[in-house]
Length: 152
Image 1 (cartoon, rainbow, N blue to C red):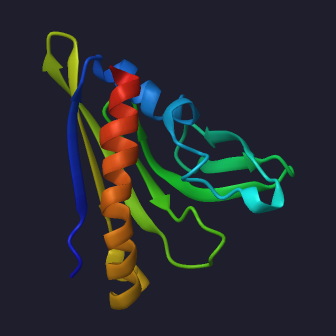
Image 2: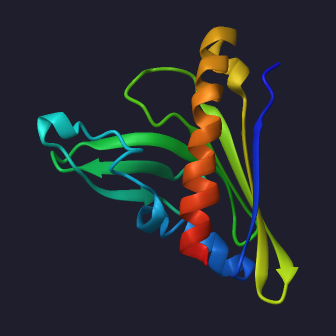
C-alpha cells in the first residue's frame, strides 16, 4: 500500500472563509503557470480554474484555446467542513486518485486545514509510487506555501 500524502497547516481565517478560498477562489492562488495543463511552448495559457460547488461538480481549467481540461470531480461537498474530489489533472487517461481537504476551527479566527491525497494504488505500484514522489513536494509548494500565503 502506498501511504497517503498528508499536509496540515493553520491559516488566519475562519473555516467558512478558508473553505471558500480553497474552493471557489482556487484559481486566485493556484500556480497555473507551473501547475496547469496549458502548453506554453504552443502559446497556450490557462484562462481560469473552475471548481463547480456541488457533489458531481467538475474541477477543470479553461485554456486560451477554449479547451476545458478536466482535473477531477467533486465527490463530497460539505461547506465549510470538507471537500473531496477525484483527481487527475492530466490529459492521460488513468484512474483517479482522491484529495480530501478538511477545515476545523482552531480558535481566534484561525482554522486548521488538512489535505490528504490518497488511493495511489489505483495507478499500479510503479506509477503510483512515481506520481506520489512528484506530488509530495508539489503539494508542499501549492498547499503549504501558495494556499497558506493567500489565506494569510
